[in-house]
Image (cartoon, rainbow, N blue to C red; front, side, top):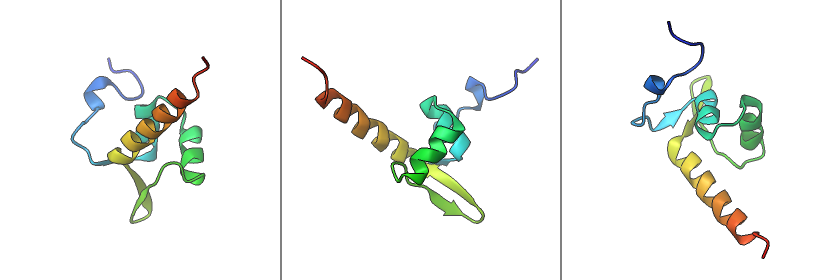
Length: 76
């Protein structure tokens, strides 16, 4: 029996762009938080017809940038 939601088998590392929901899942954050990052301009999307996709490289860049920022603010 298959659980509701995505499983490891659903993860396709060859995708260049993913849905907003999949982007949120890959970052382990909620859908609303992901839409907030998009709204605030922290994460860029690409329009495809009436839908939007998040380039995987944008997620990598976002994590890299925020990891570097948090490392600069570590208390001594």
